[in-house]
Image (tube, rainbow, N blue to C red):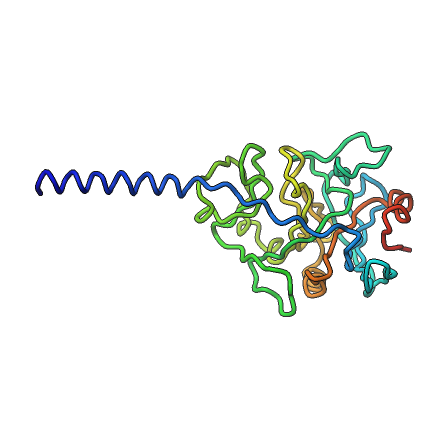
Length: 257
């Protein structure tokens, strides 16, 4: 090989390496902010007996429009929540809240949150209109508070630089992540340390709480996913019975029995 060829190859390698490094540094695009709850026409309402309970009931509600009356779509069904119960989203906290949800606290978030997309290691259920992310071997939900991808589901082979030290390897979770829906808690905007990777998903069983998600039977998860309509701006409404009673009129929440 001539000296000239060596120089050319060296320059090409340097340019390729620089381009590769530049391509790897990816700043996540900010997700489009969802419509406010006042525009929602669907709500999954989860009510617990108190803020220490690890289980409760969920009811699906819908309405014809912003001024329509909320009506239940079918019977309530059981759910399990975080092992530490409920803790309020700091931005929505009620007057008597003393502690807000934090990363790793084992609490499910109390408040109202958009349901943004579906995911699963199983096939997308027929009738599901939410966008669907297939869970594969490299799908992770990042819970490292110092990562630029904190509180995001990513494919580690496509996302760019791996700037996290902690994440959920979602395929390894098994049946519980066969089907799920991402809850837009701490997402608009994302705040470090306020909590991450909150989903609706399939439960392990009716007695085992989660680390902060809301879980239900596989049949009910399929029911929820088939029912959710992105055009109706679905939300999760989750709180204790006492807080729901206090806030129902103020926030125009669906009325539960």
